[in-house]
Amino acid sequence: MTRVTEIGMTGSISSRIFIRLTTRSSNQGSAIATNIRMLVTLEDSMTFVNSGGVTTGNIDGKLITFEPLATLAPKAVATYTVTVRAKSEGDVRFKATLTSDQLKRPVEETESTNFYK
Image 1 (cartoon, rainbow, N blue to C red):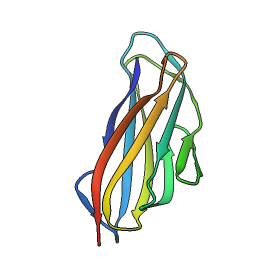
Image 2 (cartoon, rainbow, N blue to C red; image 1 turned 120 degrees about the horizontal axis):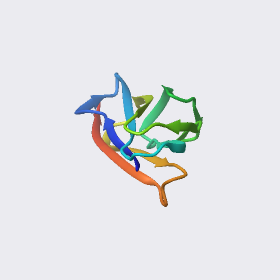
Image 3 (cartoon, one colour; image 1 turned 90 degrees about the horizontal axis):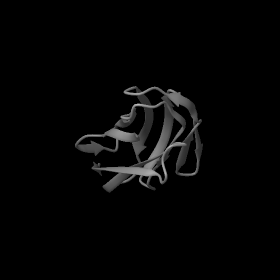
Image 4 (cartoon, rainbow, N blue to C red; image 1 turned 180 degrees about the horizontal axis):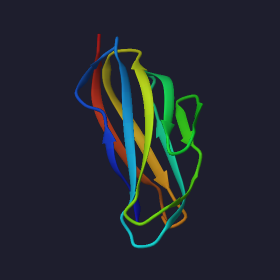
């Protein structure tokens, strides 16, 4: 089973600060996971700065689509990062969606924080 095991974004964030969001996908099963895809959805209060990780992320509006990871060995972890800047104050969410050939439906995780000026 491949799943999102962690989304890191902590505390309240000032709009003057860049925030690095880290998502880790782990293969908790005993077989190789294939065609792992990570999608990250940003809210209107976030401005995209850059992305990185095991594959390249492409931005389209508020959706960051990472190129597929061909395989993920059992017990291995894939890390993806997205850097954003707070555009406006508020209660915000960072959403990660993971799919693979072995998953029957997407795995979704959401992390919350507050942006302030």
